[in-house]
Length: 210
Image (cartoon, rainbow, N blue to C red):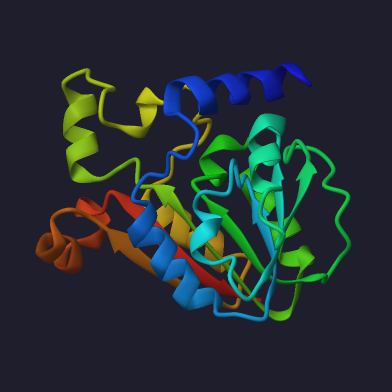
């Protein structure tokens, strides 16, 4: 296992715990609705496929991750195949071979997210969809915490986060690569999140179409 693989294996199993999924029910049910059934799905950064459990039924999934221990758990589901891969490098995946791609809480972990989006676009069949989520690093509450010198409770507290996205920056990045883009802010403050999504959203959930 590579040193990066060991880092994530330790982080996932010891810091997070196997089976951990932040807001799993909310994200999983929405992704399942967006994805539907009868799809060949590429799940990037799938970890132990706890989130994929919401949308695996009726679909075939290829789960990619750098954590071999997590992938071993994924393979217990007969509808999930796995591939050990460092997503910062070559994926070894054929062009236009998937109906859908999932990247849930992934892009903030990768060095060049724009390049990753172009790879995702290339892996999708014409008309394919790309769904996922990222932390909203520049929400108002995160800005206040950072203003007072506190990382706890913000995306900065996770040492594996390489990139930090604002709503505007992330929306522009998606629109640069996909023909249709929908972003749904996720927040505990539902009314404020609906009125001021760029300031009160905790996560940015998204659906894009090639």
